[in-house]
Image 1 (cartoon, rainbow over the protein chains, first blue to last red):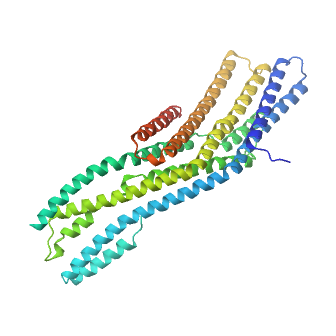
Image 2 (cartoon, chains in turn yellow, blue):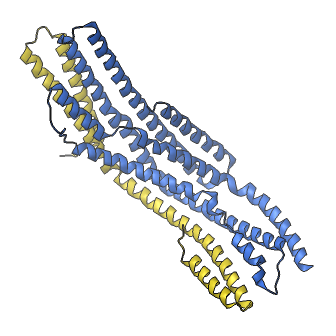
Image 3 (cartoon, each protein chain N blue to C red):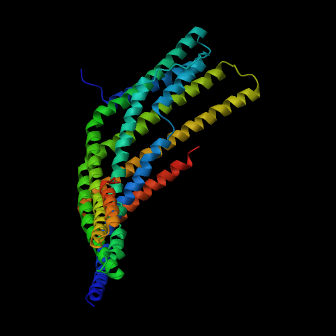
Length: 133
Length: 290
């Protein structure tokens, strides 16, 4: 048997809605002619039909997943690629920061300043090991 | 002498380059950035709808208990199917929202506005010892390198953005169409059942003559129309949200159609239209918030 599509399920839900509505109208139009039991039975039936229509509508939504699964996967993949590109761009900033740190280290070496060399190496290490974001 | 001449050349080069890159490079990214921003705001209003499939299930469950005059210590509702329906909506919301967030981030200027402060400081630092570099010269050098970096990365970004828009458009159109339809027809469709149940509840009350005094009758009618009004407000919000999704889809299609002309001025104008439309819908949506 062919699988129900979300669109077909939605149409079924519509049918249940209008059926439930029609039963309600029938009850109110024939209120005086119906016995208490008949009225209660019809009322329960109306509630059950409406409930069924709501469930089918929720079910129709779950069927959408089968129809969009591929698109969801594709967009997720593109988004991951974009994020990777962003990371690459952020590494340019890291490169600049590193270059600055190297320059300071070079100056410290030129000045034969052991304390400065130690601090610059520490700074360089921090910049290089620091997070990208 | 040589330094000061170099400095002057550097400064004029910076001015010329600034002008030309400024004219060529910004429009496209701004259009993408603005459109992504308003799209993301539009998509995020999903969280403010304040009504889920699960809410609907719990409401119905409570109504059934009220109708049957049943009292339970805990309202026991079987909402598995409704939770599953919610998870479909949330998946679409997260994936579409994540895409626009990433696209907008990639088009952000901050990404290529690299800070060269550190470079200037280190170039002019006293620790450079015997070699002294004029502060103007260092500034000019850093501006040029920043500009060159920016122009190459902007070009890289434009190329990348065009490629991503091309790759994403078809699946995005499918998702946005499904998202707007499930909101407009399924989630909002559930409210139609809620209204019918509400009608039946009050009509039964009226037909059974359970209300005696004019006050009770008036109160019941007031309650009915007040609840009906609240449901209709929710319906309107869902409609506006779905309309915003349609505008976003149209805007992305425009980006896709003109992806090779991302610097074109008319693209910027067209995107401004779509962004504006999403913002208008969003503002209408916010007016309906309780």
